[in-house]
Amino acid sequence: MDVAGQKQLTGALSTEKLCAHILERHRDSIRVQKPHVAIANLARIIEATLKLSNKQGFHATSLRDLAQASGLSMGGLYSYFDNKTKLLSMILGEVSSTVNEVLTAAPKEIADRPLEHLKWLIETHIRLTETMQPWFVFAYMEAKSFPAAERRMAVDSEAATEEIFAGVLRQGVASRQFAVANVELTASLIKPLLQDWYVKRAKYRKRGTRIDEYIEAVTGIVVAAIHGAD
Amino acid sequence: MDVAGQKQLTGALSTEKLCAHILERHRDSIRVQKPHVAIANLARIIEATLKLSNKQGFHATSLRDLAQASGLSMGGLYSYFDNKTKLLSMILGEVSSTVNEVLTAAPKEIADRPLEHLKWLIETHIRLTETMQPWFVFAYMEAKSFPAAERRMAVDSEAATEEIFAGVLRQGVASRQFAVANVELTASLIKPLLQDWYVKRAKYRKRGTRIDEYIEAVTGIVVAAIHGAD
DNA sequence: TTAAATCGATCGAGCGCTCGTTTTCTCTAT
DNA sequence: ATAGAGAAAACGAGCGCTCGATCGATTTAA
Image (cartoon, rainbow over all chains, first blue to last red; front, top):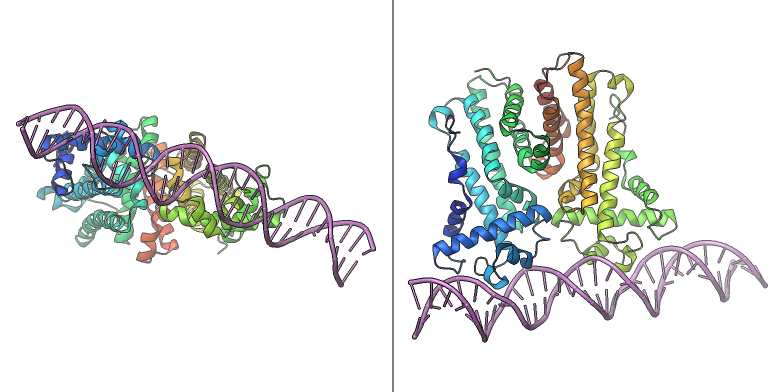
C-alpha cells in the first residue's frame, strides 16, 4: 500500500485524528474540557452528521435526528457547537485543510518530474477522497447552502486544488514534456474526473469498479490529453 | 448557429415551450383550465423555483418565498401542484424527458460515423445544458433529496445518457476506429466532463471561458482518450 | 464535595398546506 | 353595446406541527 511516495492515508486520517484536529481549531467554542471526552463525542456527532446528511441532506437533518444517532441529547450537542451552521463549517474546514495539506506533500523526487508529479496527484487525490469519502461528499453537496463566508472558503479551497494541478501542467509545458493548449481549462477538467469517484460512489460500487482500475482510467485519459511523453 | 445537425435549441426549449409540455403531462393534477393562463403561471412558478432553489436549495425555499417571487399567492400555487414534492418532480421529469429526446435525435448521416456521432453528442449535450442551465443544476443538486421513486427516475435518466455514449464507443471499437480498454468506465468519465460546464458555471463565467472553447477542450480530451483516427 | 458534563422539557418562529372568501373573466339576454 | 350571473382563478389568514435553540435540573467522575 505504501507505494512511491503514497503515505498511508487510512491510519493518519482516522475519524479520531480528524476530530482531534477539529478540537484544536475550535477549542474556544467547544465547552467540553477533557480532550478524550470531547474527541470521542465529536467523532460520534460528526459520524452521525455525515451519515444522515449524505442520505437526506444537511438541511433536512434535524438536531433531534442527530441527537438520537449520536447518542447525545439536544443540549449535549450544543456543548460542541454554537449553532447548526457552525457544525457544518467545522466539517468543511477540516476537509479543505486536509486536502491542502495532503496534496502539497509530494516527495521531492516526485515533485521534480512533472509527469510523475501529475500521476501522483491523481492517485493521491482519489485515494484521499476514498479514505474520507463521507466528508468529501458532504463538502461537495452542501457547499451551495453555506452562508456567504463559508461558501467563499469552499470556492477558494477548490481553486487552490485546481491551482496545484495547473502549476504542474505549466511546469511540464515549460520543460516541453507536455503539450497543452489551455493550461487553466485543462486543470479545471481534471477535477471533475477525480470528483466523480466519490460523488457517484454508489454507481461505481454497484458496478464493481475497483479503485485501482479507476485511477488507471483517469490517469490514462489525462496523460493522453497532455500528449505525455516521459 | 445551426451547425451540422445541431438543431436550434434556444428557441425550441424556451421556458414557455417547456411549461406547455409540463402542462400536457400533468393536465389531471393542474386545476387551472385555460392553457394560456396555466402556462404563463407555470413559467413564473418554475422560474422562481429554479432561481431560489439554485441559490439556497429546494428544501430551504419556502412556499411563502415562492409565492412572493412568482407573484402568486400561497393558495394560488396549489392550483398548479398537489404538494411541494410534486413540484420538484415536475421539473425533474421535464429535464430527463428533454435530454433523452434531444440526445437521441442525431441525424442519420452523423449517427452512422462513430467519431462524428461522439463529437455531436458532446457538443449537443453541452449546448443543451447551457440553454437549460438552471433546470440541469436543479436536477443535479436536488436529486439526492428526492423521494425514492423520483430518485430512481433520476438515476435511470443518468444511466440512459451514459448508455448512449457507451453505445457509440462500442460501435467505434467494433469498427476499429476507437481503441478503448473499458467502454463502460470511459463512458462514465465523459459525463462529469460534460456536467462541469453547468455544475460550476459560475467559475467559468468569472474566468471568461467561452462555450466553444469548452466544447473544443472536452472534445479534444475525449478524442485523445479513444485514440481517435477518422 | 464540587465542578464538569449531560439531560430533556420548553419556547417562539416558521414550515407545508387548507379552505372560506374575494376578485376577475366569460358569456348570454336584452 | 352592456348589465349581470355564474364559473374560474386567486387570495391569505390560520391550522397543526416540527424546527433550532435555551437553561435549570440532574448525573457523573475526580
